[in-house]
Length: 271
Image (cartoon, rainbow, N blue to C red; front, side):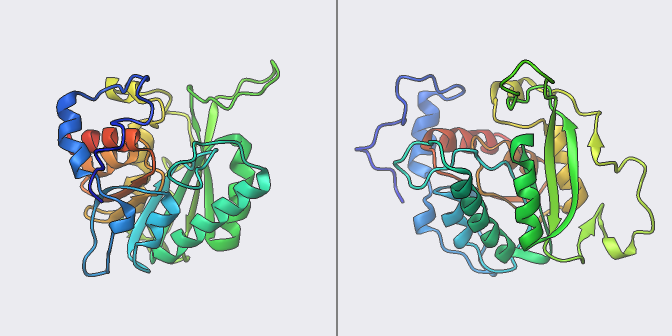
C-alpha cells in the first residue's frame, strides 16, 4: 500500500524520533509495505518488514513454511490501526495471545520452533497457552538488568526475564542437529543464562525495546540455519530482525506503528 500523503509523517509529531533524518523519511516512507497488500505462497515467500497487526500478517503466511518464530508480545496490544495501545483484561489478553499463537502453529514447519520473550508477570500464562497448542520444551531465564516489570511494593527487585521454548512437534532441530540424534546435553546449554547481563553496543542502548544481541543470537544459533525463515509478529524497531539478517537468516516482521516501522526498516537495511 503506497504512503498516503494526507497522513502525518509520524503518529506522534511532537515526540522525538531518534535515529531518523529527513533523508530517511524520503527513502523509507514511499517504500512502506502493507500487510493488506501482502500475498505469499510456499514458492514465493517475501522477506522484509510489513505494516499491520501481527495476527493479520501471520494470516498471510502459507501453512508449514516458517522455521522459527522469535517474539516479545506487547502487553497492551492494539486491536486496529487507529487505536492506541490501552489496558486489556486478563481474559482479553489471554484470548488475543491464543489467537496469534494458533496462527503461529499453522505457519511453522513440523520441525519448527517458537521462542516467546516475556516478563515474569505473564510467564505462567504463556506456559499454559503453549502447552495447549505446542510441544513445550523449556523455560529459559536470563539476567535482565533493564527489566521494567518491577514489583509495586519495595520488595524483591526483579532482575530476570523469561523465554519460553516450544516446538510444533518433537522432531525438531537443536544446535544444528535433529534432536533425536543428540545423545547428551552440552554443559553450556543450561536454561539459566547468567552470562548475559547487559547491552553490548551503543545502537542497542538507543532502542529501549531491544533485547541484547547475545540473547537473540543464542536462540537463532540453537534453532535455525542460514537462509531459514524467521518471523517476528511484533517487530517494533526491528531488534530481532537486525540480528537475524546479520546471521544470514531470512526475516519477516510485522509492526502496526508507522514510526517504529520506518525506524526498523532503516536499522535492518543498514546491516
